[in-house]
Length: 379
Image (cartoon, rainbow, N blue to C red; front, side):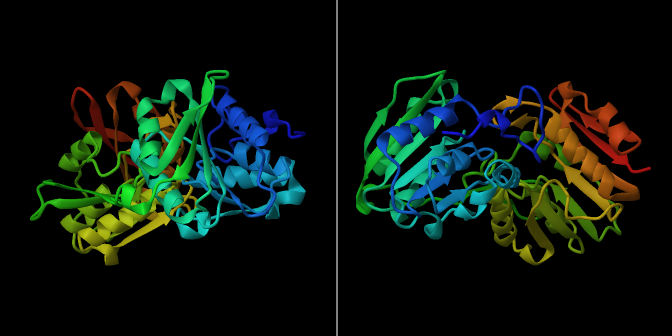
């Protein structure tokens, strides 16, 4: 390979010294795919879960053409495109992004997977692979050993008759799955996941979640604490649920305030689909608009009066405040003077100073041993 992987960047995602665009698992997966022999016919290789384009660019550099790619995170999609345009400018047209489904996988003979953190997410992926890929398909799934478990082998074994593990290298490993099980021997589809929760509304709030949505269909305890204390102006007509996840906050707002329209945004395609499903399950889909966005990039400055946020405190498998601060800053940008950001955060993270700096005067609304709820007013 002539590609210099050290030149890969995470941009436009958060960048820092301890946040890398490529790791040893990517390199091991590409090496083993090359040793096994890449398919010669274009359009037979599918890549699932590539973080920032290392697998896509590595395959292109190995003369693989007609790649089909699924990345759940918009930041990953944009980083892949930026890396391809910068490092392999003549090959940017040799891959395409597709949603998880039949078009992505039909006829594939080799599927490369960056193992997700969630077993549900792995199962959801494999269900589509088994249903749509060629019967002769080989799946190569990689991860860092510290994040892998025997349960991953078990999930692969529900869909494939043969599952083997490579030797470890640089604390990484690859699982190889072949021989798709007959449809009658595979698990029945079970997504979206479902749950219901009593939140002081006339009826329990219904939650739906596709598997790559962080937290699945669970009610996040921070979200519950926020909703117990959230108070919005009676004359409010529009709100933004930033980082909407499974859509709990958006649906709660729409149910509790019948005249409120909600824009729900997340960089995860799965989260956007989940929010749409949650809205439909609660019969408020006509007042919730779910969009995939990089924070609130598609909204103009000073255009909103209310933003609600439960920010993540991790990026992939790394605990890092960068993504939360990015979301807080963008909330501050889109709020009009006097507009409010309602936020819940892990108390030990101490975000109040950043909220004051990036949004405006901040008042503590509630606090328990784990979470703090604040409201910040745009200057």
